[in-house]
Image (cartoon, rainbow, N blue to C red; front, top):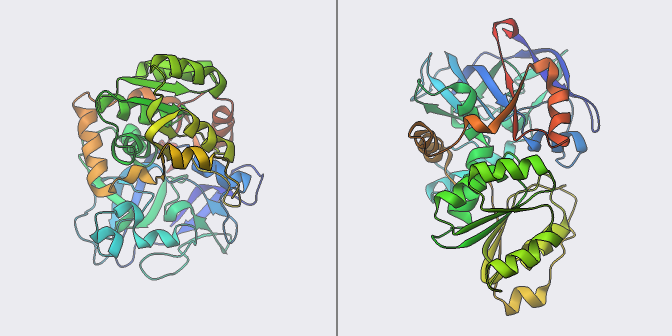
Length: 375
């Protein structure tokens, strides 16, 4: 089918909305009419070149929700009319990581930036006859997408798709970074560095886990204000301001858990996180940086003698098929804020403005919302 999508043709370029062609679903695939897509910082890493791809153009978008319109042969558990959320990490349920309960590390993730279909390895999205790589095998910057069943999770039909899209990446990643990877316990002191679309949900997760203090570091005043609404107890503009305050608040013990959720992580951020993490504490690296950046700043003396943990995290360490419905259930019960995360809505044609607003710190999460005019 022919539709449109926001394509990136090279590093440093703007997104361009152009006509694309998407295959009908084949074995194990479905076509989804996308209702909304989050403007996640991970797609910005494509623009900066921080996330390398083998070729251009790239069809962006990996945080979406919509309705199944076509079902290919061999699909199980999905039918036309079902509401689904995308999982930016596909979960096959059969590989070794999946069988060990680590769906977020599914072996199918090796193909996320290849542009080759899970089902048969073909190129299934094209623009002007040229291969297009859909971000994370999805491409939610288009009102339609054909995806493998491993990349979508069925949800209840009464949940607004516009907010359901958020649990496809940012919400789950932040929430799980606090509740699963950091393993925040009641009464602990938690520091969260970066209060964007992921960090705000680390705040929610830490607060829900019973943290005594949730201390947020972010240079944007409005984000610090929003963080307080999400469950933060203290906020600071930078690490220099935060360090003496955290020391005083905790009587010198510092934080049991620190979570780095900055949009573009640098080596210095690791040293800063560990500096406010106390003895036997854990620093979680959730934010993404440039794939070529291998320089990390940290005190090996401090790491060893204070017996601290430094732990990476993807998708919050959670299983997409379990976590997405569970988080949406919390939303339905009023225990998880989703509506408040969507600060600005955009048309697909305004995608570059949406990303500029993200760079300027104006949004928690910008959201592309598709209308009948896009179909």
